[in-house]
Image 1 (cartoon, rainbow, N blue to C red):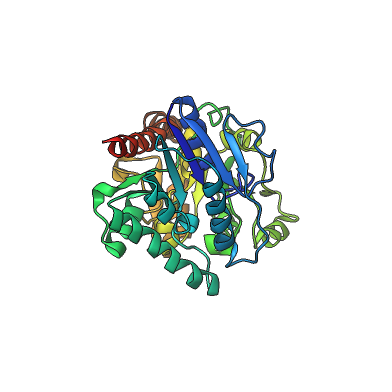
Image 2 (cartoon, helix red, strand yellow; image 1 turned 60 degrees about the vertical axis):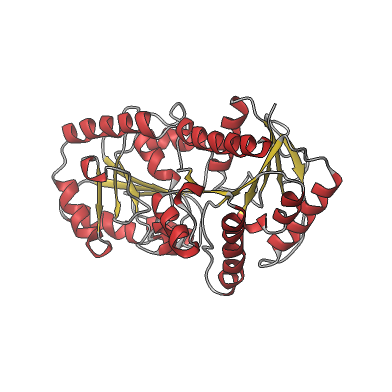
Length: 371
C-alpha cells in the first residue's frame, strides 16, 4: 500500500481547512495509507480515518513556520520514511524538509494553496520562503500543486516553472452535504466565509439597501468571523433585512445556503483573490444559488461566458450592475438558473475531480521514483 505523509502547518480546526480535509478523505477512500503531520494536539484527529502526528510549537507570528519545519525534520529523522512513500509539503515548511527527502530519494510534492496573503512585515518574511520552495521544484524537476489557472500562471511567470510540473487542485464541494431545498419566500442574498475588511464584505449592506430602495424586497445573510464582524453585526441591529451569524458547522451552513437565492463574491480585484479558488463559489452552486460578484480570475469558472446563473462585474459597478441584474430576475428565472447551477456543480465541482488530480500526481511521483 502506498504511504503518503502530509506535512502542513494548517490546523484542521481552522475555518479554511475544508480543502485539506476533503482531499485527505478522498485519498483514504482510494486506498492510500495517509499520515497527517501538523500542529493539532495529539488526539485531535482520533475520529479521522488517517494517522496523525502532533508537532506542537510555541512561536510568535513570523517564526512559526521555521519552528514547525525544524520540529518536523526532527520527526523525520527519528522515523522511517521508506521509498514506498510520497510526502506532501505545504510551501511554508517545505524548505526545511526537501534536502533531507532528496538525500533519501523520497519523492515529494509541493502544495501551494495560496502565496503569502498577509500584509506588512509578515508578508515580507514569507515571500522568500515561497520563492525558495518553488525554486526547489524547478531545480529538482519536481511537482507542485496550485488552486487555479490564474495561480498556475502566476507561478509560471514568477518562477519560470514548466506548466507540466504544476497541477491544479481547485476547491470542490460535498454534493450530498450542499443541496437544493425549498427557497425562502423573500429573495435572500448570502455571503459566508471570513468577514474581513479586505474581502469587500462592508459593501454588502449598502448593496442590500440599494436593492430595497429600488423596490426589490430582499434580505442579506452574512456568516463567518473576522475583523469587521462587529461592524456588520452593528449595522444589522434594528434592520430586519440583515441577518448575521458567527462561523458554524458545515451541516448548519448547508441548511441555510439551500434556502437562499444568490451567493455573493465581493472579494476585490487584488492579487490574493485573483489567485484563489474560493470554496464558497462551489458551495453556492451546489446549493442551487445564482452567483454575483467581482470580475477577476479567482471568481471565474472555465467557460464562464456560458453560465447565465453567474454574473461578475467590475468592482466599481458592483452596486449598480447587481441592482439591474436582480431587478430583471423573476421567480421562474431564479428556479431555472438555480437548477442549472446545481447541475453544473454535479458535473464539474465534486471533490472527486480534485482528488483524481492529486492521486494521479502522487502515483506518478511514486512510479518515477521506482524506475
